[in-house]
Image 1 (cartoon, rainbow, N blue to C red):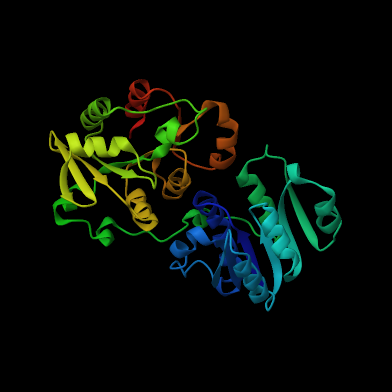
Image 2 (cartoon, helix red, strand yellow; image 1 turned 45 degrees about the horizontal axis):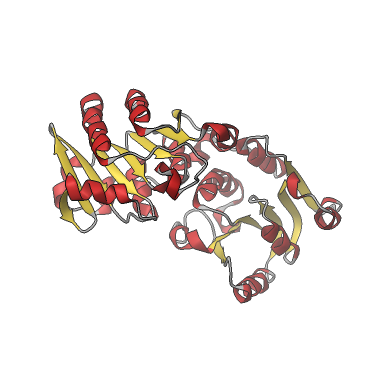
Length: 341
């Protein structure tokens, strides 16, 4: 009989779930695994058909689509429904579906009479209570324990490796995409664009260029700079003043036989491939932080010190993990260079 895994939150959360889906696949076969994820990332994972049998998407706003999804899934009798996002919506949807057992990761902060009556007192439900203190690694392993499955090192190779040639970058970049560090420069580097109460980094264009040149001198490798979805003024200030245009999405800066390459508008797939082929990843904590650990890459994860406990919940299993605390870029850049491999 089939198993349905429900994880309807963000990209990084789903990356974190993939090793456990792989463990299930190894034990019960891909043909027995259905997955329900958020509509916002469905388009990307839909093509990864080696991971699961059917991939369903949950609309965040369209009630009619949600009802149609439930009616579609009700036609299937599942052995297990596994809820890994602890979301109310996921738990409620599972209540309308057919299964022998539900394994529910349950946020104890949401404990109320309704959920206690419907779920905690129902022998059909196996509850893994999350008090927000335990690491995600331990919680997800408790879920697998209920299915008598153990995770294996091979399960952490979450997706197939692809080399940089599969990206079909412009020909002028082909010599500079083998020995490099990835720096993901998104809105999280700027508190005004992200979370105001977080310590501000806010690199300025001149000091960022100085950092790039010092990086070249220390690391003896190229650097690829990718961007986020939000408009970040620094990127365009760098392009306007220091970088040479290759085409609409690629710009380069040369210094002492090394190159810094800005890649605009990268897709999730492109970010994955750039990441898995890099020597180091420098990022303010996000999806790439979790992704890098699956390819044994030296990760420099920039975090807010006041939230360190929360970050550790998600990163406790990562190898080659280096945390740096958010601070002004002049000081932070020195620490980054010291942590490069």
